[in-house]
Length: 425
Image 1: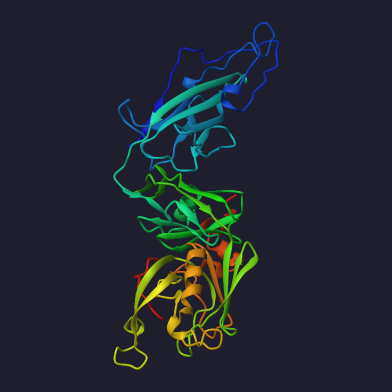
Image 2: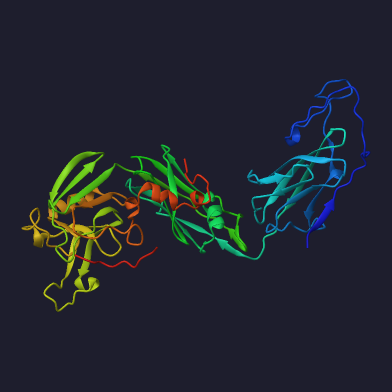
């Protein structure tokens, strides 16, 4: 059990200051008084060791329990605390509150585990003379779970629609704990854009700006959770940062009713492609999707979407120049068997098909993170999460509400795995 340790000095309990006016600043080392020669900068704060106490274990070998708040109290009945500054070895500050009477200060943000702290306490005695005491201590590392963060995607160059993801090693359900986690997950971009995290579930967060990322931007995601208390017996661990860059703004708009895809590069039309999309019963999903990856050849089978191999609708074939847009198996790919319908009718099982030449061009033009937007289809809306990156289908006001910092009244802004299977052809 922790108990208070009192620091004593040989300084007389009372001192009288004659013939000068004290100037007291509430910022640790900035406290000054006037000296015997009348110069207010001549005097220095006295050693206030006998005026303060803090809750620490006895003995230098003992370490402070980071699960408990730090408490500084005025032990001299005639003195009071004027300011407390607490920083760790990395320069991070610990927030706290000082009582109105100056008798007690306590931390309001958690201490980090396994960390060295420096505490500067400023005081004044009954005559208003300023005092100061510097305390140093280490926190223990309690037996607990470590919360690690894995950022995604891997460092590299992506399209302007690529969200940043954060996968947690442990579930975080409590709103307060989520706010602690979110404050420590930093996303910086150049140029600077407004963005926000969204809690997809207890272990997964996505980050995106209000609109697509700028072209040729640099985006860095990192965590400041190391050593930070998230919840009882749950502490943040070290995490590897990721650095992304964006390329040109590639947006492919698939008009299922017009049977045509229009591809934009930096808002200029660079190609118009005759296509076919999902036929009745297999309609292509509407909405914004993000390219998840590219494969030169993919084996597609009707059995993966519930079509019997004995059915007239069944198929088992190799598909070339395939760009994936959903985990459930929707692709943009070459479909030489349907060239006669491309530009005129929708005959696929959900994918967007085009000729070999157009598919090769599309494959070589897009990269992961580029946008494929489907309009005028009779299919259902693209899922926001769980079937690829449907993040851009969430309205910005709703997206902001997915932040734990917005939920707890903070600003929230910052200047689910699925089994892969081919679905349709």
